[in-house]
Amino acid sequence: MGTLPKFVIGNWKMLSEHAHALKLASEVAAYCAEHDHPHVKTVICPTFTQLVSVEEILKDKKLAPRKLALGAQDCYPAPGGAFTGDISAPMLAEIGVRYVIVGHSERRQKHNETSKFVCEKTVAARDSKLTPVVCIGETLSERQDGQTAHVLGEQIARSLPENFEGIVAYEPIWAIGTGVTPTMEGLQDDITTIRKLLERHQPKTAERIPLLYGGSVKPDQSAEIFAIKGVNGVLVGGASLKAQDFVKIIQSAPQG
Ligand code: 13P
Image (cartoon, rainbow, N blue to C red):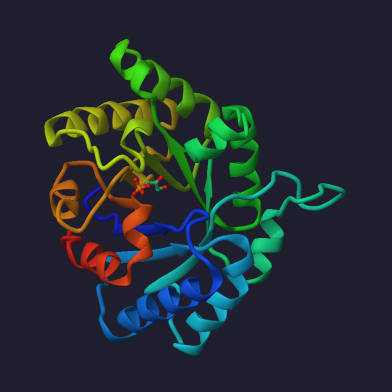
């Protein structure tokens, strides 16, 4: 596990208008072009309408995906067909997308997405050679009821296909967009639990699965989060919309 790189993934959600997205992408790309952090993989996930323009910005800067890669926020399981309003994994791959977030709690909750559906998306991503970033996380009431390990276990068992190759992001729902983060001791316990669940459900690939934390990650505590054993990166919402904050988070990722 010591050999896994550190991931810093920015999820721009539906929070950025086009002009802002282009400016943000240019600023992050300029930083990544000028500074080498070989131990860090940085990914930005704009909304669908911004992907092509952002890809052009990355190309202009001649940025290798190793330094800064493009991600999408979702994909549909089918490769194509009559699915009004949906975007398939091959369509994303075709325009230079490398990563795709699936099963974000905002989709699980607001679009009633089941873990089975998330698993279908994960398979579609893999079939198009995209790296899936599969999100899991419990609600506050599940946590208060002592259900956290059970909920995470179910999500891991049902959202990941056999021999899963990709990234898992632990995003406790009560920490998303709230400014509230788990205590570092609490997060260490949860990460240890998730690592054990991955070993149980994905015995062949678990040690290759990077495990990220997401939920109110800010530049002033990202170093502490990176220091947690078993955390291989962060999935950042709000703070990824300010280039300065996002860059500080990249800088806080330790080597090794
Ligand atoms: P915030 O960093 O804004 O809490 O969002 C986290 C998140 O949902 C990233 O996917």
